[in-house]
Image (cartoon, rainbow, N blue to C red):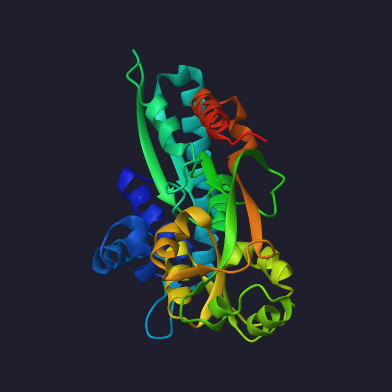
Length: 308
């Protein structure tokens, strides 16, 4: 069969559905309602004459044919993106699309160079016509999309580097342990034994990509029960209930700490530093649009870094 532009668009919808694990989850990714997504999927199945997935009350699951089509679609989109990148490299910095992703709520940190780097990069220059895409993702999702060449640069905390990606440290952020004012840890003071007893009986919440590091700092074993939040806003909601303690970046927690809604717990013992890095695919190291923006990021990060 000969693929046309409509087929490719429907394949992209199908790919997004699989990545999001269902039609409902894909709505935010595709910015389309469920009925539109479902209709596109049905049209693709009719075009391919294949049943790609099961959807309904039993949940979402790929059929064997769906798994095969998804694997080939991934190869296709990587090839198309590679072609686009090659053309962009030949054209130089004159045009193309710069696809960026970041973890949530980094903009609240004065040391984050992203906005300043974008401002520099967007200055009008003759012959430059660049489109921008910016997405908020988890570190795991960012690395996956870098490997699939769906994004060009990713800003986040990467605890387990991938061999096909290159990482450049930009700046550090400080995470403190916080509890709501009503939580017993807020009244425990700095007495080591008392605070340790309170924390050992407390519920702990964490962003999943920092789980291991935060468990180690609190002395929690792998069997300890931890509630996971996908982003800082969700983590804050859990802590503000007064039922959880958890680590959050100082810059994000500051407004609630200043009003007394949050209490910082013994910062001399329960603080950690996370290094924010920018990651790119090794294949992107020769692309002018990527290397120039990376240079802007590192230059801006250097200018805001605190003296040692």
